[in-house]
Structures are given as structure tokens and as C-alpha cells.
Image 1 (cartoon, helix red, strand yellow):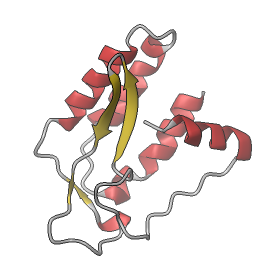
Image 2 (cartoon, one colour):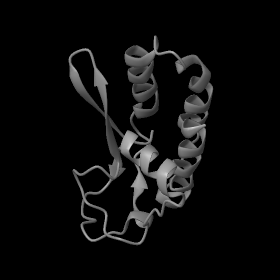
Image 3 (spheres, helix red, strand yellow):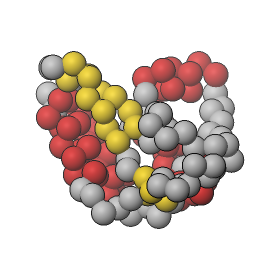
Image 4 (cartoon, one colour):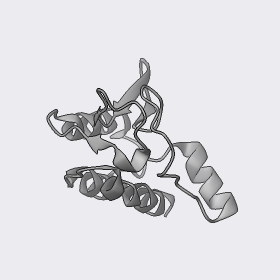
Length: 121
């Protein structure tokens, strides 16, 4: 899901450019996001294959589909935002985005723009 400041920038400026030909930074926020929970922040992470691939570009990064990260992320969103006013309205779109199997960032990258459109209305 898009971070609130990205949604705000999108609403205020129009075009949003996603750079996919820059170096992927391990342990940064290119493959994770945080959500507010009753106990503080929780990270939603999309695991990637990065061992021995230090200089890879974002569009070369492969997602690690061996873990159940999709279900974990949707469960975390449902648990923490399930009572939010419009959550039920957006849940099907969120589940659709998370239901697809993405091999690498080349197929994942169009999805943030989709999630921006879905989530910004």
C-alpha cells in the first residue's frame, strides 16, 4: 500500500514517477511500509532475493515467494484497520493486488500506481 505522503503528493502534483533503474537498497523502504497499530508501528514487508546481489537495480530484484507474506500483510491490515470507515470498500482491491504472483519488480512496479489510483479514489 502506498504511504500517506505519497498519496498526498499524488493528489497535489499529478504525475508520480517511480524510478526502477536505480540501485535497490537492502533494509530500506523500497520493499516495506509501516502501518500504525494499537501497539505502535508494524512493518509490512515484501521479501526479496538479495543475497549476493548488492548492486542490482530495482527492476532486477526478484520477489521471494517462498514465505506467506501476502497473507500476513493482508491479515495485518485487516486486524489493524478492519474497523476503519472505508476499509470494507477498499479491501477487495487490496486483496486483488496481494493475490497476484509477481516474479520481479518489473511486474510489481505497475501495481503501486494501481494501488495509488485505487486508494486515492
